[in-house]
Length: 343
Image (cartoon, rainbow, N blue to C red; front, side, top):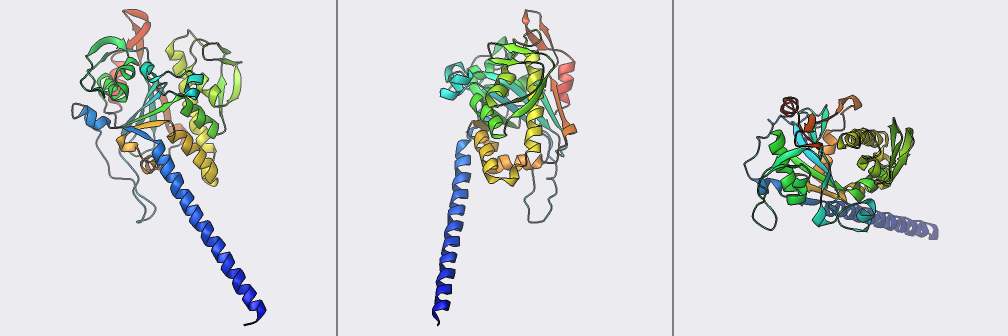
């Protein structure tokens, strides 16, 4: 064998070794990333805690068709998901953003997200946190149950009994089974917006709210994560200062975020996709049916073909509470008719 041939063979062996090492490192990195994202997710076994004394599940349908026989079928059938934005986490960043400690936990935002059975439409129903409700007896982690309470604010359910009590209170209020539960905290929401590169909103009036630290002139603005969180929380700088004005901003923000996620082709950059996934999962609590990256990804994939026109945002119909003009109660029969449409 000539010297030139031996040199070429050594070069090929070296190149193969480098490629092999790169593949091993890439596989290890991907495996670590998947493990890390899975470990990020916290979960609560709501089904086990509440048992069978709940509204019936929506009828299931045949899973949606997939492009090839080898592909896994995507989830199908109507689903109702309770989504809460909470200030329940401790930590320096949450404290800086206005979050409370575990003893003062509150559900700052509550939305019931209804997915229709063939995943072509999404209805997001906001529940004002100032709504007076009957809070049913709730199991608590320390054992025992809380007493039934009448004419109490809706967001007290989370304060008293966490996610389990929030879910059972919503089910008692609506008569609708919550198939899943998703909760994200203040810092997680801000990180998600930053991971997407910001979000664009338009305000019809000036917002000047020292409590949420938000000051915006009327017009279109590009918000970072901290500003977007303030936008979602502000209430004293708009309208009559009620929770209903804040809900309008939250619904606008939901639509803007979905547009941002749709317009940003995350699949073109693994680093960008990982950054968003890490931001979401790092501050997420779900029920045990959604507590893995695979389950969350499968749900997200089943929603990929929903058009912009398929998103509808509404607020539960309410009127001023007879006992307190600063609180509201469900307006009947309109509220019951809305919830019936989601069953």
